Length: 117
Image 1 (cartoon, rainbow, N blue to C red):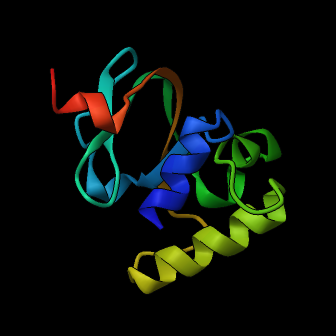
Image 2: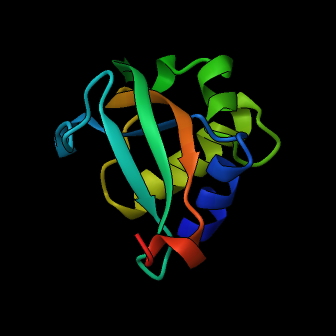
């Protein structure tokens, strides 16, 4: 799944992500930059956080759902996918608090030349 999500980031389709507030900020902050790794641990992209906010699961809107880039980009699909994921993690509740982050792709890292740097 990590490589599928990475492909969406590289294609410019995925510009948002979220996680339970209970997991903490994970080092995120507006303006922070992160290297995204593929499933083999190779650096593949540099992204920059452009907006970070807390929202309840049931208050996530269609615009943010679309920014996550998954499925048919609808709010209904976002809710289904994320409810399933958070249920597997035993964290789901309709009113659970999420960190919702929007980011931009700064650079695609060529896996062939990344090792030469």
